[in-house]
Picture 1: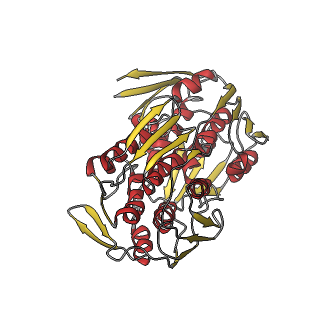
Picture 2: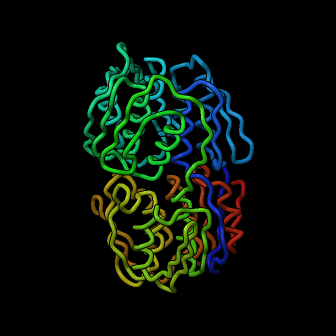
Picture 3: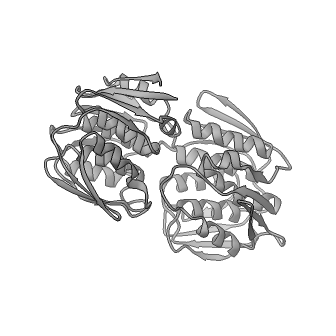
Length: 418
């Protein structure tokens, strides 16, 4: 088990380029199941979750070949319609194979999903949407078994909540369903839009991605394609937060600033200097941030996956901030680790009150999930002394070369074997 050791004090300076979005690449790998043949993805991040999804596809019968940041996948004519427990329990995104396997084979057997422990994240909306298309489900020994005895047929589906996963599962099934599917209140995240772009490149007919109403005209077959993964807005947001926390100036290149509109707005309110171009963002952090209140919401609101990084910044603010978490009921689990470093934080249900302090103290902490782990490293950039972050396999799931990239910006940081 490795650890990340970071020594606080100096500002970060320089530029760093981001790769493709984890939350897009994983789902686009799954989308390949819809068409036999040779598919290609470029701008793919070299992270643990991509490796895990590759193992899921291998089990289904695909052949995955990685070359740098390119991924070539050969999808068989007759995929095995199952995803096993030992893989699915490690990564929640695996549940997304349910839709395309039902569409391709008429059956699917997928273990109940795992991934980051962020509290209750039921798949009810996934199953309800797929049932509307004609699928039937049973839970057998911890495995979701789905069947479409009469095939899938388009329908009008109203999502009670704009769930990203449910939107993706329904979309991946509806592209091969008979007739038209109308999806009301779908998720509008950039990764959803990028998935629709890939699917349309394969021959699908999808309109309205990124809006509150998507229309999918089912087609008989799809064909392989080559697609470049959209830049990772969460990776970009993490590095600009690192610059802000360290009182430095960091430029992130190869990103899309419009995907971080709310996050950049809140950084500006906190006193950061924010500049942006077509494909870059530059942020300079103040000596002490101003307090800021915000609530996490589905896109285009403030991303829940940027909440821990922003809280780490506000721990140094001159005043009190209130953060409301509206998506995951256990997202605040990392706050105990931040409080171990001296942060003054109290919680009540989905609200966190952060009373800013001029200093934190480095100490041993545990990374409970991908973004919280990154946020604890960021807090260590400014804390007195050195901070040792354990359970860094969580960070590896979402960031390629996290330690090296921060070191290139001037961070005193290293990765060690525990």
